[in-house]
Length: 427
Ligand SMILES: Cc1cc2nc3c(=O)[nH]c(=O)nc-3n(C[C@H](O)[C@H](O)[C@H](O)COP(=O)(O)OP(=O)(O)OC[C@H]3O[C@@H](n4cnc5c(N)ncnc54)[C@H](O)[C@@H]3O)c2cc1C
Image 1 (spheres, rainbow, N blue to C red):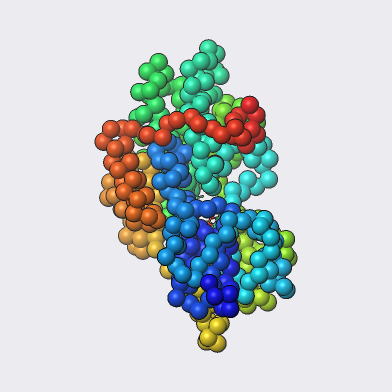
Image 2: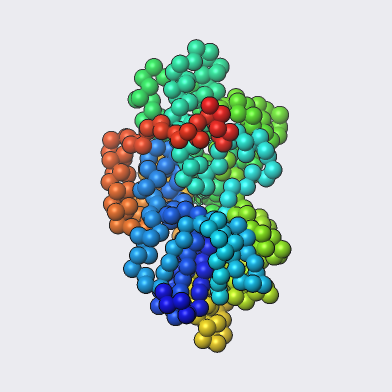
């Protein structure tokens, strides 16, 4: 770093922030990447950590390792708590940080829609601690069930409710059902499989609404065949840690509720809260990805609100990656006094896996399901994982589990603050 060149601060080393940092590697700027974690996380495989298929290290990689060859790059492990837009300065847990250009790529967080019982007792799935909490809860519930003499309570331990029929809910429910039927059933020979239940509750009338209806129906059918009870028109009203209450009045006794029904932009710090926001708290940006009135500030990815064909852009990795390239290019254009590029989204399609040999995918007009879609899913996720070591370890892990019907990450190792249920930390 020269200390004389313009400083571009990027907040967030997720899909968007990391790509923006890389895209600026040859630009005449110094890049400072700030994240509260020291790793880049591949969120699409988090559900496999939650269902004992992979360890967190296999789907994450240290930021310093990824960008160690980039000479104009510096990383700071800090939490950003606010932005002083007029003074061009960030407030962070490690002190103030000045910028000439700012790229905010802070991503999203679980949206519980104000359902406090669910937030308190249920599990979101957004980061590594969430996934580990789910894994520990599932495995611990099986142990508790083995010790429980009351049949009703035993069934509640073994009932797992997944809420939300989007890709995360579908993948989570399918993987959980396979973990139970293919792996845990052998670990617990005294277990009566009829006592176990996985429910996927969807408030609407179909799964995977971002995909063609035919693929949503195929996913529901496949889940039923994997013993997942798929329910439509099922809105969850409350969860007290022992019972899930639906808006219809129905009560499902269950100790575990996994909330995959909503995300919103990450909480904006002091200073950003005055900016105009769209749906789900996302910060409104121009087609150049600049914040109106602040041409030196760009917002990308889940945190940005921009419409495409009259609809908000989806909160998905390809949007963040494509926007990162435009934001980085526009920093260069500003420096050179050139006209700025406008963001246009190219939808690469969508994929969701339901378990072994089963997935649904669409790319353009092509729709595929079953084994072919599953292979496409495997290949694309392996390619996108960052780091050769991770790709190799995940491939080996998948191959082992596929041929031996195994899930290697079945240790219950909660940290002290994770003990208890949900986020309560009750011992
Ligand atoms: C379980 C799950 C499965 C998913 N599956 C898919 C999928 O299959 N396909 C797909 O396209 N998309 C998927 N997504 C969505 C995709 O992961 C997001 O759209 C994408 O990560 C958004 O990228 P981003 O750069 O905006 O934010 P993120 O990748 O979320 O990165 C945000 C970064 O900002 C950091 N950060 C946030 N706030 C602060 C702060 N105040 N201070 C410091 N650092 C901060 C965070 O630590 C994080 O590293 C999935 C998401 C989840 C949760």
